[in-house]
Length: 116
Image (tube, rainbow, N blue to C red; front, side):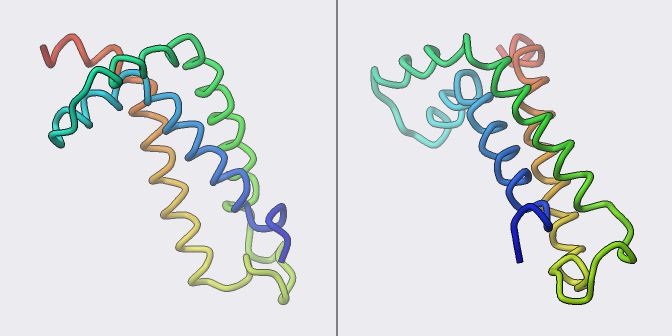
């Protein structure tokens, strides 16, 4: 059960990259909304120059995850995880969740001025 056969590795990489891409902009807003405050929150904006890099990594990782997750079940061998229908459905749901995170990371800086 190699992670390269299931799409788990690229899916996790895409999710982490999406969270890092939105850390500079969405992170402080979420923390303040939750009641967490402090001068250190302003330091999260230091990640803004790396945002395009994180988004690029997330999109590439999602592409590789899509290639593995949405392939036909006939291409999976019976011993592989992708042959189990319940696992395939779970991976597809997680894929769309991570895709939503990447979409939020892409759109949030453009939507942010409308919130203030």
